[in-house]
Amino acid sequence: MPAIQLLQADWPAPASIFAASTTRKGGRSTGPYAGFNLAHNVGDEPASVERNRRLLASSLDFPAEFQWLRQVHGAKAHIVTRAGAPPEADSLISRTPGIALCVLSADCLPIFLSSRAGNEIAIIHAGWRGLKAGIIENTLAAMQTRPENLLAWLAPAIRSCCYETGEDLPRAFLDKATPAESRQLKSAFASTRKPGKYLTNLPKIAQIKLRNLGVSSLSATPQCTRCHPAHYYSHRRHQPNPTGRMANLIAIRPTPA
Image (cartoon, rainbow, N blue to C red):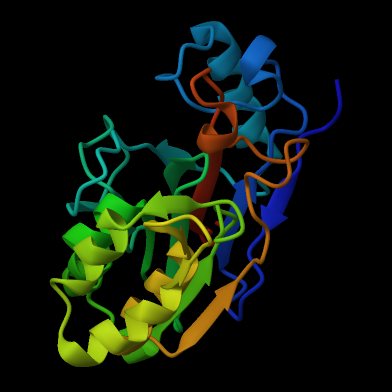
């Protein structure tokens, strides 16, 4: 079995911050979940998922408790002071060292946040519904760190090359935006030769929202999850068949005793 692979966040966060995304390399899952599936809710064997989660924990260079989510494509942010049962929310926030905040993804956009001081972190599960509902806005509002003192990293997700949508999606964003934001958001939707079809750029939507809220330090990977079947699970690529999920995790490393 090949070793698991972690894609480390490429951003100017302090050394005390651990931030990474998994790929599908390695792991114990088989069939449509082949590789390193970390999700219990996609039909994979529970024992395989648990073995994969133990592999993930053993790959870290510090002891960590894992905080997972029940992701619902909504706009609720949850503050974590100790690891526990998965809350129904789409972002996690913490100032407690040793807790790995985890978001699962297979095309949706994971957004990592850290204070420049390294004393507060957050991670967001951002599909188009969550972006429209205000998951970024609600997460930043719940954090103690001011937006100008935050760093952001956008992990692998489906990109506009592979994300064709109907005209209802750009309309959903543009109709509720201010005139200034509407002008910016139009650049995230490219019309195609098919009537009523657009190529939608989720990372660009997120970047526009983050900048407008005051986050100026933005980093992102250009990798598209649908384009790289050997590296990433992709819900859209495998529809209507099931597939696995990557984990995206961020933690404040505990200070050695």
